[in-house]
Each structure stands twice: as C-alpha cells, then as structure tokens.
Image (cartoon, rainbow, N blue to C red; front, side, top):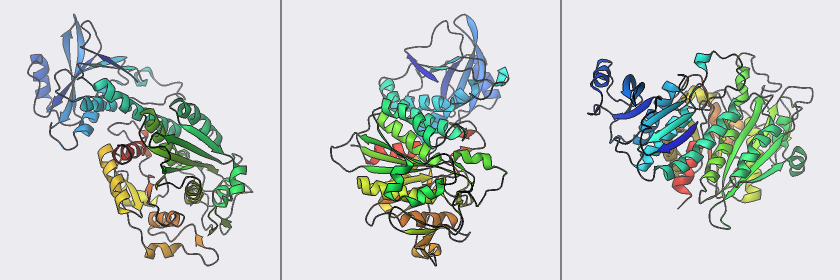
Length: 487
C-alpha cells in the first residue's frame, strides 16, 4: 500500500473521499443528504463504524465514507484512530477503486494521531494473493494508494517512524503466510537478509556444522529428521551506547512441525507452517527497530528447524545433551519448540551476555485453552520486565496476560534418567513449557517468555488485519524498545 501526503483533497478527483467522525459529532458542513443518510443508518461515529454515501465533488459524483473514531478523550485514542483508518481500507480494498483520499483537515488531530490513522489504513491493506491465479475480479485487491490530505504539521515525520513498524509487521506476515515448501530454514534467512541489510542490521548465520561444534544437541535433535538443515539466524542492531550490552530477543523458528515421531493428527496440520511465528515476529521487530534507527542495542536470534518424521528422526525416550550441558529426556517429539529455544538462549547468553532476554514462540496449544485468541501468555522471572512488556502490549495492541511460574510446576519436568524431560503432565502444559526454558536462563538475568500460539494466525479478520497472519509480536517488541531501551 502506497501512502501519499497532499495539502488538500484533489479538486477534480473522482476517487472516494473519507472523513473522520468523533462519536455523536457529525460534521456540520456535510451535504444534508449525507447527514440524513448517516442518521437514518444509525451511524454515530463509534470506533470502527463506517458509513458510505455519494456526493458531488469536483464536477463528479464520488463515494464518501464517514469513519468513526469514538470519543476524543478515550484512553485508547491511538488504537481507535488506527481502527478508523483500517475501516476505510477494509471498505475499499476490493472495491474496484485504486485510490482513496482521507481528509484530516477538520479532524483536529495531532501529528502522532494522524500517523495512527495512516498506520491502521496501511496495515489493513496487506494481502498475500501471489498464489491465487483464479481469484474473481470482485475479490481482487484494487486499492493501491492512500492519499492523506490536510494532515497536521509533523505528520510525515511521525509517519516515517510508523512506516518502519509497518514494514516489520508486513515482513512477519509474509514469512508466516508462506508455505513450508517455500520458507524453510535456509530460505527464511535468504528472505530476511536483503531487507535486514538494507536497514543496517548485521546478519550472522550459523549452519548445522557450527551448531554441532557448539554442542547444540537439543536444537539439532529436532532437525535431524528433516532433509532441510538447521540454521541459526542472528540479527544485530547497535544504535545505543557503544559497548553497552544488548537486550536479546529469541524466536522459535520451526518452519514446519509434523510433530516428528509423535505425529500430529492430519486435520489442521497444514497450519503448522506458522510454527515459526516467533522467529518471524523477532525478524519483523528487528526490521522495525533498525528501520526507525532506534537508539538501543538489540540482538535477535532465530532458531530455524523443520520437525519431520523420517528414519533418522529422534524418538520418544531419546536423551539429548543441550549446549548448556544439561541433559533432556525427549518424552514427546512434538514438544520441540522448547528444545530449539533452550540452545538459542544458552548461545545468546554465552555470546552476548545480554542485559535481558525475551523469547517468543508459538509454543503450546495449552495457552490457547487458557487465553483463547485474545491475548498471548507471558511468563517471567522478573516483575519489572514483565510489567514493561505488559504495558507495551497494552499500548501497542499486542496484549499479554501474565501466567504463573513456581517450584511446584518445575518439579513436574524432572526426569528419572536425565536432568529433565521435555514435557510434564497434560495439565498446566504452557506453564511447564515455560519452566523448561527457564532452566536455561542464567541466574540474575531478567527473562520473559511470550507464548503466542493463539495470536500469530487468525481465522477471521481483525481490526488491522485480514484472515491469516496477524504479525503479532512485532508491535509489542517495538513498543518495549521505544518505552524502555531508548532515551
């Protein structure tokens, strides 16, 4: 989606014109027919509400949309403005129109508020139709450009920051949407590398031989059943104080998860192309952070594997040795994400000594049973870090709900023959998974684990996304950096 800024609506334009409307405050200068139609259709300007009419403009009859922004003093004002922009795009994305003009001249917005409208409009316009060769014409995306008129001073500068965020969200959606025959460990890296290097990220890659030398037996055990070799992708951004230790983001990147020998049921297995949603989110967040030149030092690690059930695949009952030296009895090969993450966490601690670690993973179905598709679960050993991330989630819309940790849960993953086993009992499954990862975090290092299994993919459209990949995780990480690591 292209964004263009102009000083006023084009006088002779025949493209649709959109206006923002506060709740219960229809603009006084509207065509009387538009006002009457809005009232008759019970349009009041509630958040996300949209009403379309037709007006004479520039010597032609054009479509006019009124988009509701809710109450001006609402606590979540920026989110409401995003939804208004998104509602405009959703209305016209497949309308046959190629351009829509959003006139902000009478909306009374600040530059940041205006940028929020544009962000919502752009995010809702993302679609990935490259494999749809017979899509009916009335379902094809036609909208190419959002023209922004009458924006307040400073909007274009504010938009450049949000545009970097949109770039990151869209990269994550692309990676999560692509099928597993297209995105696998090696191609994930090649898809990310050019965009990462273009914004100044330093890219490092460890191959399976490098990881074998380091003793990453947990991660490599997951990958050994696949013909696709494992990879570790490292993205560095050094925009903060020279020599200051970075914060670390770690992402689970299982590019396809059959469950291994503990094979998943066939129904719905195609969804497991998005089991790399954590790595996708981390890569997208780094693109956003570097794209807006964040004044922070951040390193990201994506553990990339494919979990397949061939004759070389690891078996239930196998014991593997992690990079930390701790041994793991593999009870269930479908509990593979934590095996990937534990070696990534060990490696980033040894290599970078980070000040804090945040890992993201589509880790457990149990978190969906707990929280549905409304919030991701957060587990943490540090109250301050947990609070910062929850606040970042509230501000960004990537919401988080804190879940418990404790010794009673931890003992459920003790093994009779190894240091631990990779699953506990059925109950509390997302908690024991987090307890497993915590065993690899160095004492004194603040750490948080975000289980995003219910949030990376949506079966229905949301406020700022269509059905499919949501891009969840990018915004909460970016907001966390803005609010806590910069300044």
